[in-house]
Image (cartoon, rainbow, N blue to C red; front, top):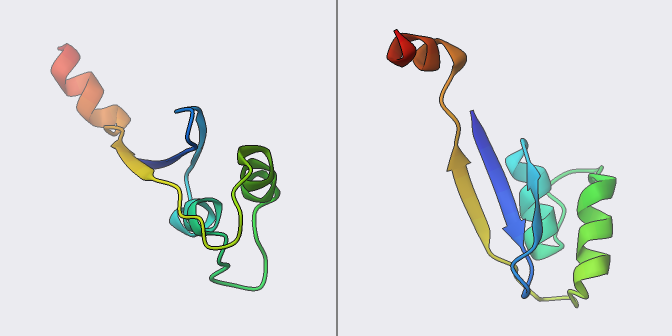
Length: 72
């Protein structure tokens, strides 16, 4: 599973399971008809103006099966 973590200038941020939602939070440009309200609020709180692109960090989380295999 991948988590898309969008950071503001202070280093705080929010994680999304959807790449499209993270892309909106990072760029302010919608890929579809609807956008995630959390992404809208994050851009507002971060003070991101139109044209501001925030960094996105992709965090790979291993599947539960892989975790069980390594635990044995």
